[in-house]
Image (cartoon, rainbow, N blue to C red; front, top):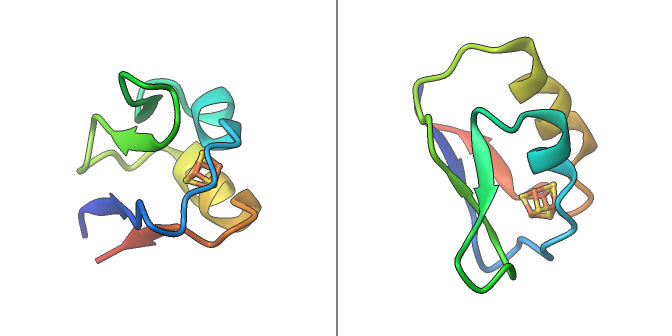
Length: 60
Ligand code: SF4
């Protein structure tokens, strides 16, 4: 189940990057989060999914 971010929904709060820096980073403009490790199974991914204020992180 690859991890994806709905970039239209992402508000760029950086919470996922703080929780899980090996999986998420901000894009070059610093406006949206992007997934750098789509197949990560880290516990922090679930925490980020639960914490994201815009429910923009999805496991497909
Ligand atoms: S936690 Fe959600 S809204 Fe915040 S940067 Fe990550 S994907 Fe975007």
